[in-house]
Image 1 (tube, one colour):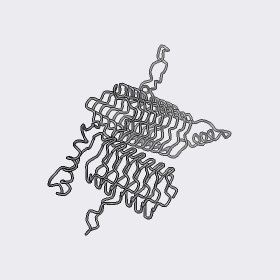
Image 2: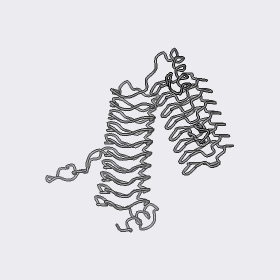
Image 3: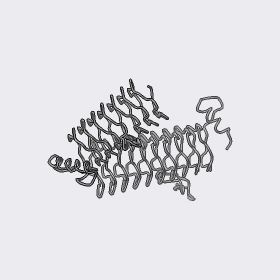
Image 4: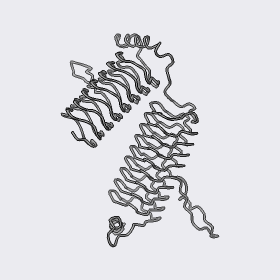
Length: 429
């Protein structure tokens, strides 16, 4: 491929004399390396980019109508406002890609027939196809994806705010931890989809097919499920008469702890709706509370050491002075929660060998959390979102904070000796 095309396109983008928009309609560009280039405004209508390397490429406002991008490497590629109608992305690697305001709706390409009539161009018409693709952490905010095929696609931690998924086929896709706030899923097919820990606040689920879907740990604020098909879907259940049962549950759990599991019964309230309950001062060490809804719960001075709190919804909960040593909070949502003075340091399992079990907060949502005065030594906080968090006087020595987000976080007085901050975003100590 001549370099003139790219030099001319770059000159065009900078409004220089001699610049010209790159037009590569219907060209076969399979397996070529375009990584790191600025291909904004480029016209790739109907082009074949099978197996291409487009990693870190910029394609702002590019025309990729009916383009073949099967098995392409599109990691960290920027498709902002790109026209991807009818594009085929089957098997593509799209992790960390940006598709904000992109158009991935159905596209129909026509050509003159033998009698002069317009007919569909074979293999160049139909809905955008993202089947079996990987789009982990991709940002598709406000993308148009109506009628798209997104079957068996990995959208783990993808940002899908206000995306139009009308009639889209997302069956058997993995949407673990995805943010779908305000998304329109009207008549979408989510059969067998995994939505563990996803946020669907204010999303539209009118006539949405959620048969056999996994909805445990999903945030569903301001969502009407009355018109959705939830046949055989897994969703958190409300425990009836919990208050009258709690004493017996805690007594059995205490016996289980004291006897090292030989007697009593471990607390297992996983996949239940416990929102608004008061568990202050209780010993729930090693309890299974995974996938529970615990928004606005009070756990003041409770013991949750070594407890399983993965995927739990603890928004606006009060865990002040709580013992969370060695707890598993992976992929939990604690936005707005108070953990002032809480203990999240490692649990010492053996004094003789100094074996320790660190607290796990990986991929956890911690926006505007009050961590003031917390002990977070050696805590695992990779990929967590600490936007607006209060980390004043927090002990983060030896903590693992790889790729953590610190936007507007208050770190005054925080101790960070030996902390791993590789890839941390907006970190200003």
